[in-house]
Image (cartoon, rainbow, N blue to C red; front, side, top):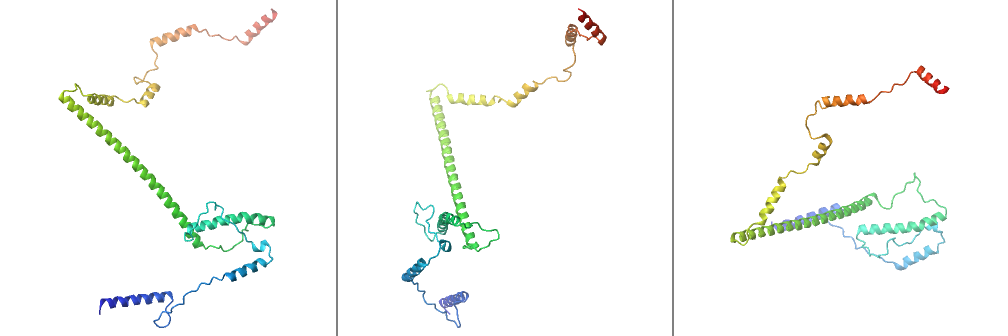
Length: 270
């Protein structure tokens, strides 16, 4: 059997399996062909129904119809209906505008607008649909953050390359100047090499000890070392100075109670 015949049989089998899985395979081995769908645009009938709705004398509370444009429609941006994110955002803005119109009307009619705690109603959008919308929003946010991060990294890389190039150019320039100076010195055009003095100055500066602020502060607070023991022991000079100062001080003793009465009586008689 030819290989082409085997491939054709395999293709027909897979086609039949797909048709059976989709439910298009009826009795036998024939696939029922569906008639083409016909779309009817009955404009006259739609206008007739609209006139019937307009003739009905119903209050606004029975209709609850609100016509409003989206809140941020100043830019008049044409929204692509295939773009799910922009389409949902447009619905959200239009709902906000409708709420701003409907709430004052309901408050004028004295109707409550807050939902009770025990109220349950099925949402117009399914949970799976809202999960897809939320995932799409998160994906867009993450993509925006990644693009901003990549942009910053590119800018940092450009700046790093620029600095690196400037440093390399500076080193090459110094190297050329040094080689030119060495050639001139060998030919006798100059008497000394200036860059050697700069190198010696850098070495002397690096050899000098750096100021240690912590050590200076400790020296100022605690002293510069030395003997700490027996620093408070008396000496000949300290004892002589202390005795002389004690002799100068005369201790005043307060008289007793009887003596104070006698002195007081004498003062009163005078």
